[in-house]
Amino acid sequence: MKNLRTFSFCLGLILITTTSIQAQEADFIARNGFFWTVDNNNPIAEAVAATQGRLIYVGSDTGVEAHIGANTKIIDLDGAFVTPGFYDNHVHFEGTGRLLYGLNLLDVSTEDEFIRRIRDVDDRFSAGTWITGGDWSAYETWLEGDVAEAGNMVNPDDPYGNLFLPNKQMIDRFTQDRPVLVRRFDRKVYLANSIALELAGITTGSENPDGISVERNNNGEPTGALFNPVSGAVESTVLIRDNIRELFRNLIPEPSREQRIAETREVWKKMASVGVTSYCDITSNPIYVDIYQQLRDAREMTARVRYRPPLDKWKSMNDLGIKVGFGDEWVRFGATKAWIDGIMGNSSARFYSPYTHNPSSRGIWRDIMFPFERSPLNPEDMQSRLERLALEADANGIQLTVHAIGDEANGYLMDMLERIIAKNGKKDRRFRLVHAQVMTDEDIRRGGEMGIVAEVQPFHASDDMRWMEERIGKERSRGAYAFRRLWDSGAVVSFGTDSPGTNASRYYLNPMLGLYAAVTRKTLSGIPEGGWFPHEKLTIEEAIKAYTLNTAYAGFEENIKGSLEVGKLADMAVLSENLLEISPDNIKNVSVRTTIVGGIVVFEAD
Ligand SMILES: [Zn+2]
Image (cartoon, rainbow, N blue to C red; front, side):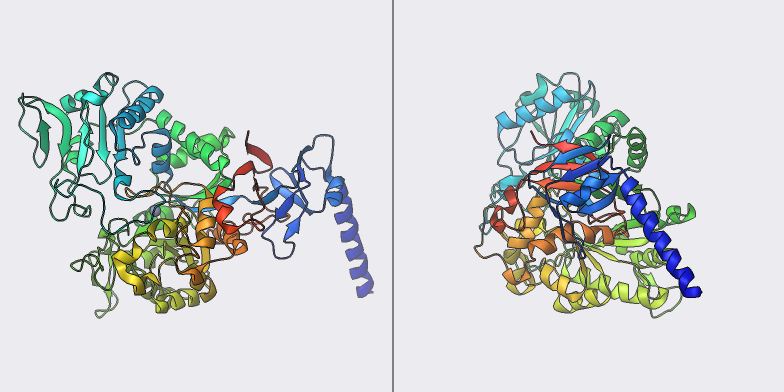
């Protein structure tokens, strides 16, 4: 009797399922494609169907027919290769928007181009809006794509290292209705136009403001070039005291909401054009959360975001009941971000031993490491402020993500994580070691054992390999961007970009550059042949997974994103080539034909 009841119950279920599949009309179907689903149980498909943003079918071209209805939008992919939408694990969204919509002078060191770029922005910005930033001459030092020679190209006879120094006359003619204050990449030198100089009280007769040198012509008139004090080596950018920014801080208004929205749209447009359908926003101004909601409600969002405030905001999150999982499928919360050391770009990352090229320095700890004091619970236990914050946030269900570049910084975090596990107990915490850039063998092993997420940005490897060994030597470089060993250790390797980069490098949102870097371990110009520490290469299948499912896992979102499976969001990227078939050297040239988010086409190449 019992068996019979179970039998009829099952039969009923089968009937219901079958009927509902037949009845379920899709509003979106893509067919005649090569879908690389990143689902182990069903790795390759020809077609998908979606209703209300979610996949209802992933399978064959014949099977998808059942879902065609009167209102189904059907795309014929003509055999194209499709992946799940890319999920960028690390985007400085606000900075990216400012660079894409605002001024970018990173690759500029000539008068003509300097003028042209500022004029472009002048055309785009509303009247009165300040033009700021720019970071001119960044690539004077390290040319993009090249293998660097020892040393750099800045002028050693100038204590500021200038090869190119602009003046206000270059831009005054067309910037009469707005102040301009742009800077060299290392913040040693700024250029102000006449209006900005006037607002700051820097005129022909004025005294120089404290701690700032003002360049003047023979008549004592300021040329617009302003200098922060520098000491030490020409190339050192670590210890700049930015007096100029301080002087102007109260004069430059915050960007308007309209400006921020324009920047936001620009970033999403860029993301859609390169197949990015989700991203983590690292500590943009909280006003972006409000902007995201406004644009989500207006159905303008084309990429999903997981927003991460700084760790010292964990208490406010906790007071509001925000934990891992909070939010909807467009805007989510649950993690915090902290930084414990510097970066490789200016040799401020923290190492156990001194830099090879600068034996007097091991890099720096960030402020959050201090005060370093006695634990309230145990007089022998010395704790950083970071550790106290991390212990509490973790105990309250908030995910920790911490930036660490140098081997000592990564080692400190592995020690700290062991102590957190000992105090707060084992749980599914998915600690995100952000960048995990240079690690000792022992720390790679420990990270894997503790199941960390290595939140890495593979293009850093292509960029940094040009000078890594000069700065930290060959032995330590073995542990740099050690993606293969991290993967094999049991760590979950997740990919992204760190867009827009630092003052020394630009990181583009394009996932193809990251996939290329992880699979080839070469610079953009294809050097070295065979790859840098080639045993650390990942396969293309692994690299795609790192950029999709693993990043979804890293955000506790693997149930809704990261692979093309029934029930998950219909986010995908249609590519110009089959990544599994082309030569790895060509991955960097692959483009996106179509990007689909929630079953809606958000980008189509011309
Ligand atoms: Zn970053």
